[in-house]
Amino acid sequence: MRLFYLILYIIAFTIGGCFAFLNQNRFPHRTPKNIVLVQNHPTSYPIDYVESVGKGDLVFTQGKTLFKANCAACHNKNMKDHLTGPALGGVEARWAEYPKEDLFGWIRNTQAMIEKGHPRAKKLWEEWNKTNMTSFPNLDDEEITAILHFIDETYQ
Image 1 (cartoon, rainbow, N blue to C red):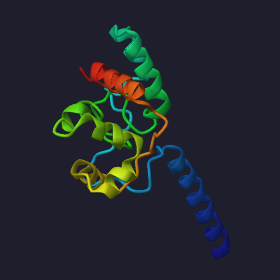
Image 2: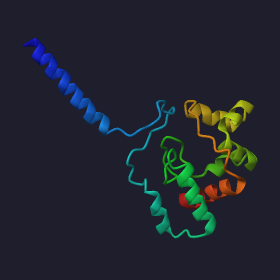
Image 3: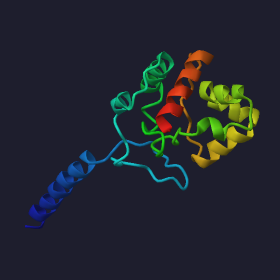
Image 4: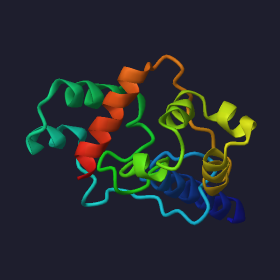
């Protein structure tokens, strides 16, 4: 009889665990310090929502395409809320005290910026619990500018 109850408990916990697992979003194994992750936030619009905002210039369109391909997996599409990575709205203002090349360098290779001891890079590294941002060495200045333009226009 005890064996029957033991097997019943194991089956119940296995089924319950499966249902709990199905409802979880995938996030990195390390959560940033003092950051609340957003799940199904009412202002987290799908990326296609931005098209209806009326942004139609070529740079915006290129930036949107590049954002979807390179950034959207980790950064919230509304640019206001944190996701796996920080909210990107106002990113240029947060890097304003440094040359623009530093922000471009951060996007291309975060680890190199941290190893150089860049103060903003080290601060982000610590704030996000030493979680690596994917490096994008293939993006040229024009492409990064287009992404930043898209972020700025979407954030407004």
